[in-house]
Structure formats: C-alpha cells, structure tokens
Image (cartoon, rainbow, N blue to C red; front, side, top):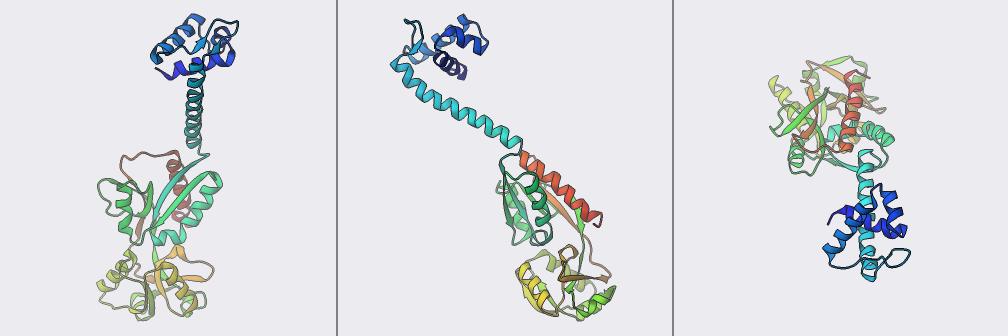
Amino acid sequence: MLLRHIRYFKAVVDHGGFTRAAQMLHVSQPALSQQIKELEESLGAQLLDRTGRQVRPTDAGAVYLRYAGHVLEQLDEAARAVRDVEDLSTGSLRLGVTPSVAAYLVGPLLQRFRSAYPGITLSIRVAAQEEEIEPALRNGELDLGIGFGDLPAEDIEATLLHKERLTLLVGRGHPLTSKAAVTAAEVAALPLALLDTSFSTRRIVDGYFRSRRLRPTVAVEANSLLALMQVIRHTGLATILPENIADAELATVRFRPELELRRAALLQRRGAYRSAAARAFVAIVHEVTQAFADGR
C-alpha cells in the first residue's frame, strides 16, 4: 500500500465518483480504478459502493477513511512544518557560550536574530567553564557554541570570529581613567577583583603576571562574572576582563605590555547536521562580530 492509494481513495469519496476525481488528480480513469482496486485487495475489503449513480464509501470504507483522513492531515501538517523550518518561520536553536561572551555578545546577537526570525526558539547555556562546550556539542546537547578556538578537538570545527583583548576595567570615576595606559607592575600593585581560577580568563591573567615575576594584589575573587562586574561598579577595585564588556558605568584602561589576544571562535561539531536556524544564526554571528573586528 502506498500513500498514493490513500489519496486517490479519498479523492473518489470527496468527489463522489471516478470521473471528477481522475480530472482533479490528473490521471486517467482506468488508472485511478486500478489504484483503488489494489487498495481494496491489500485490505481485503470493499471500500466503495459503485452500484448507485454516485460512488459512496461502504461501512468499511467509511471507517478506513476516518483513520486514513487523519493520517493525511498529519502528513500535510508535517510537510508544512518542514517548510516552516526551512523558511525559518519556526524552529529551535541551542547555543552554548562562555561567560565573557555572554556578557557582551549575546545581547547584540539576539537583537539581530530575534528581529529577523521571531519564530525561532533559542536555548542559551552559559558554560561555567569553557571546557563544557565541546562535550555538549559532541553529545548533541548543543547546536552551536561560542568560545575560544585555540586548541579544539579534532571533531570540533572552530571558525575565528574576532580577537578578544583583555584589559583593565574600572568604574567610570576611578583615578586611572585619566591615564592612557598603565604598566604591568602598576596593575599588579592595584587592589584587584578577579574571576577565580576555574575561569580561563583568570588562568591567562595569572600566567601573564607569573611570566613577569609579578604577583597581583587580589582583594576579591568571584565565581560569577555578573557579581564581579557589580563589585567593579560599586567599589574602587579594578579587574581584568575583555574590553568589550565595558559599558556606561565601566571604563577600560590599556596596560603595557598587553596580554595576548584570545581567539573568539564559533564552535560546531564537525560533520553535524546544520538546521536552517543554525545556518541563519551563523550568518548573523559573522555580521555582528565583524563590527568588533572593525573596532565599531
């Protein structure tokens, strides 16, 4: 039995005969009759009463049509759903990001994406540690990730988005805002509020000072980027974070020599299926991050 048999049977019932049904289906009447005969033989029951002027379903045909009609409706809905997904009127996307990326990039990304594709549902997972993103991509828990692509695993594809610069971040009223730059020794002598060592940012900062035989003055450690930013806004402490995090209440101060730039990257499982929503999101990611690369 084929789906075609069911559609032909329903057409004959809907049009009350073979002639009009054949015209609507653009097939010959003998071919249509043959298809209905094959359906009846496969079910072992007569589905149509052909004795009157109008063809009507038998009791068996009426029962079969009730169930088959529901199946056809669901199949039509499924086809529409596929088209909706492909034209991005509906769908879903699961995104994993690092805390620093969440702080400055997620907002602009979602503003653009939601404006263009309001029917797409997004699930955003902020990874407590960057190392959580790759396993989640590998296990199919995430569709895309944004992290740092310096040493991705072989099965993870990393596409460079922009280079992230770590800088000194202080409140707008901090005395250092009047300086163009500070030295590593000056920064080490400042009372600092830093992310704890579970964050890659902190490990980079510690390595920077260690390579210069300096020990930073850590007054506050935090395991939350949000909490750390609140500390900087409401105290005289300074921190070291990506410069893109700066806002109306936070200012950046360059220090020399600078920390090595980090490669912010789009992460995907190599060879994984790319939904229409994922492809559209990737395009917007590149558009938005180009603004950072251009310094806008």
